[in-house]
Image (cartoon, rainbow, N blue to C red; front, side, top):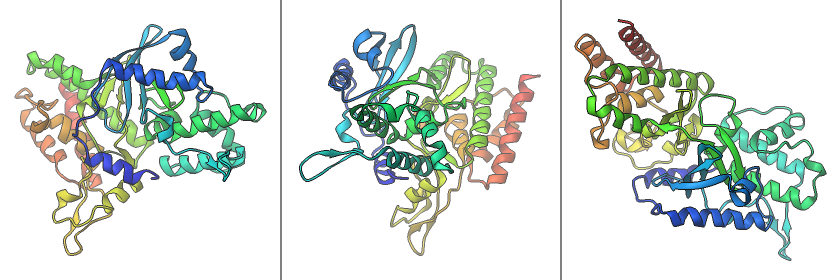
Length: 382
């Protein structure tokens, strides 16, 4: 993955306070992108809504988002949405052009840009794009908010601005994953963009539901089982579409329910395809124990003779959800979603939760997941 070192650094600075989230941060973010829009430096289908029409109205700042300079809530007509960008200023992204010795910006040709985009998609999303000449326009249209079929007919200045804006967006792994796979009901839907800013549907974080459950925790076990089953169904769907995708920062607040009650993944800054994750782990040096080779919640092992982390992943998404959400972590100050069960399923559930929290081989983990799902479904039907 192109930004392995940068994302690895962010992972290990996890927990450090982010820039305070204040209303002035929102105003400055909007001013920054809208100033560039007025100067013709950024494009996007939602720029006019944000900068001119007042139909996309920021309201609440959302703090403590690892890896993003911009995250705030807004109203889009009558709907709540979230506006995001990994960097506030476009100057902080890698630029698509280079400057010659006279300081003139030299942009890639359309065909070269197609190749750059396709290489990025293939490396970042673990996708093999064949027949580049036949699919290049489709790939660009899939990754931006405009149909690109008439792209070559636009004035060169507009083409260059569009190329820059697309390049800002595809450098953001979360945007790339959500936009390319927006036909799947796994990630929040992207509604549009303005420069490097992208707007997604609002999805209610699951930690809000934990707060609602708390006053009558034991009595609400049935509702908690229903939520756990939705999480298990989500994990099955994710594995079906992305068998090599790993969630390395598993928190209850990183999942949410959309308007239809479907679970979606809210934060993808620490989501990795296996090859990239292994590169991150293998880069860790001088390990003395297995825990040294964990990449947040993704576990590997230490080869003690060489003091190097091994190039293998020992757990999967189900086990991480089981450990961090179903069982719960004391250090995160919340009960497990499936804690305090009724006596009728206490022992069987307790045993399964203990099993799924351990490091298992992939086959055993799938067996435990299937048994857990069967137990919870049976409980609801008794």
